[in-house]
Length: 430
Image (cartoon, rainbow, N blue to C red):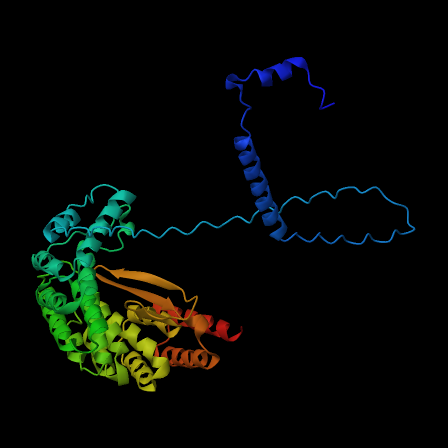
């Protein structure tokens, strides 16, 4: 086939320009380059390592169990992530509360003294008053001059009889101010109390200051207190304190006597003006130091003085044979009036006059008594139910002696003694 050429092709070769045959050098060179390049590429290929085939895992032996269709396992839902606790916020320090600016103590005193006591006090009124008083206390010694100046004027605002005044916690303004001084404490407050002790015309001031000083410094100011008591009693006896109730002063005398101070003369000099206060405190003096003044008082002071004295002696008679004998002797000599006998009878039956707060047995009946002469207030406790059988027997014996010492008759005094004997005998039957 290659030897037979078509006519056109032969003519093309024959008819080339110049009559020359076409050159084959260039094509040959190109082919040579291609051959060399292929050889080089082959050489490179042969020199590269052939990767080893991956090992084929042996198929597991088929089991006799029937082939089950492979069902893709349901993918368990992912457990919810545990909530992450938020980091605690760093506490921001609260801004310091601004301290309340001090209030002028004299302005506080004005608010305390201007309380309207002519009308019932509301809870709001009482709260404002108490807040002003507490503000004085909180401001400490800076309040003392204003308090001292008010007390030095010997003024007071009494809350007695004012509706709602029980919310205030004090019987009067002075009582509240003295309590404030006690809470403030320190040398300035103590000095203010001592100054008030010397100048006050109010027996309640002396009693309250004495209690505060005793609590703060036991025994240190006993002398100052006793001096103030004596000074006020002198003024009261001269009617320079108005109608002030001097009961607290007699209680302080009694306390001084209990601590070993001889106050029997202080008491007896006021027997005619305040017989019940005098008799009650004389009977309470330790070691029988008040007995002789009481007997003298019963013999020398007719009327209220004698009655107050024999009542006190009748209280002491069951525990003191000397007193019992003295009472019987006075009856035999006719030194006791029928009225005095009627008055002493209940005290042989278990009654006891008492001044101030007394620790009586639980359930003891007590009656408040007021004597207008001298503005004397005290109580009478009925101790019959707390008497032992031997004490009851002793009292019945004294009554029998008195009845035998009396002349025959049916007087008020005899009837009163008989009635007390019946009461006491009834106690023995229980």
